[in-house]
Length: 77
Image (tube, rainbow, N blue to C red; front, side, top):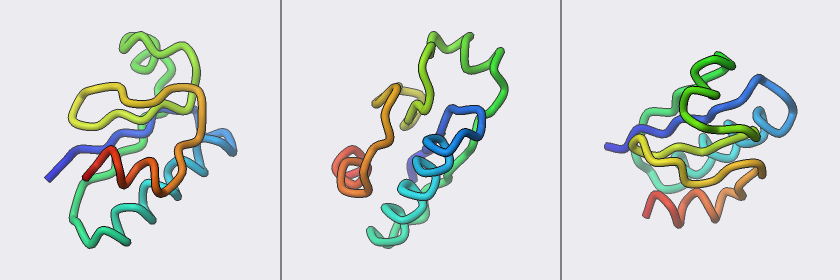
């Protein structure tokens, strides 16, 4: 099981990233954990300067854009 984190302040792009991650997990039929991180200090401490950011198992995989459902599936696959 993977740990998926969405780093963002709750802006529309961040919300879209969360929705796409939830849809990707549902379509793949997996039980991965999706965590929303909205604490700016924590986001900055990870070196992320643009949101949204997609983090999988502690590794930053995408920053500053909304990944599509298919992109997320590819990263999880």
